[in-house]
Image (cartoon, rainbow, N blue to C red; front, side):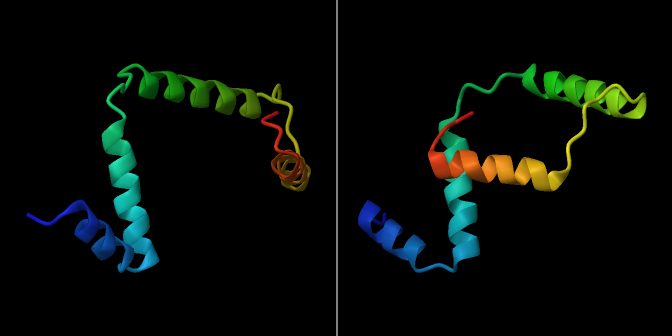
Length: 80
């Protein structure tokens, strides 16, 4: 069996896309706390938001405004 060091060296020699896929799979494998209700909750939230957009009650913002606000947050290190 290959050593950790060998596996890491082989993985680092892969193209970026393959490294990203492997990294994603490894991270997903660490999360054993999957909430079976989460998917249903997200679908309900998406349905609600879509209804708000359709009936005109949602407050919509231009993408440029949202993008600029997010960029400012990331530059300042502030989560909100």
